[in-house]
Length: 208
Image (cartoon, rainbow, N blue to C red; front, side):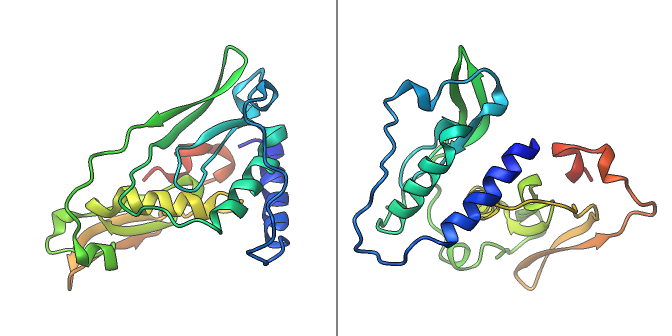
């Protein structure tokens, strides 16, 4: 992610933390997403995704990201979403014909609710139910989860990590992934040789 994006997201984190706590205060500054200026772009790096509460993600130009993000953040504090609602996830942000667009991943059909997984996303009964969830957005931290919990946990981790800047990435290798005492877990092995992070970008930083 370019330095400009890091700076923008860092400023938004500070601004969000400074918002007034009064839940009954009237909301102001509603973005006019019908205005073409909000999505006008020249290249992919000018586009970012914003995920409104209870709705599909939208694409905006980085110039308007702060206004749109803070509006939806304040709005989400006043809303309660249907927990059974499945929303598409963002695969990539692109500038297509000078308009910011999103490539979305269609949500999978919801499976019957597992009460134990809802309470504990790492619950398991067998080794083959477990996987290591590793995201660049989260600095490659290793999360051991049940495979059926992966979409929910990935969305939650990405939402929490949207304003995170990674200065170091967890380059340890996952070994002996298993289900132990009904809990997905695994061992972490430190590479024999130090890896120069400056030579890796994006997904490569999390490669095992």
